[in-house]
Length: 176
Image (cartoon, rainbow, N blue to C red; front, side):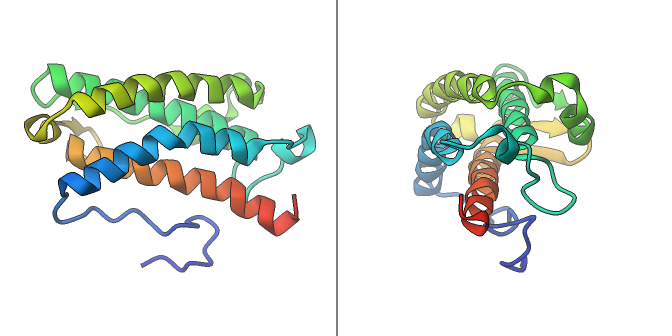
């Protein structure tokens, strides 16, 4: 279990559930549905200096973090669509740290929040249409192995809360 004071994991590390109930999936879908608005609210009234502040020592800036969330969730949405249309496709990871250093990571955070609103709207529509058999489909991650869509939904719900918490904890610590 993660140390709750560990700034890398403000809500704890993700733990793959042994079983995932329909209630768990409803909670995950609701969490993903609410995430863009929560992210937008967590960023409200932050100035450029604050957006360029790392959320922890040796961590990304708030700006890089927001762009990372968009990168990650666009990738996740694509993986879900592949898993629903192909038989256990192989998906690859990407170098998140290298992505965070690309020039577009200096873009306004609103661009990525806008992307997340659109991606999440479509993702939620897709998730709400899925039944139990579809959640048992999945993909083979080239580095992490097989993952069902049920587990992936739980993971990305955690991921959403994990990164929004990075921003809200930083704001609280700094009195922003």
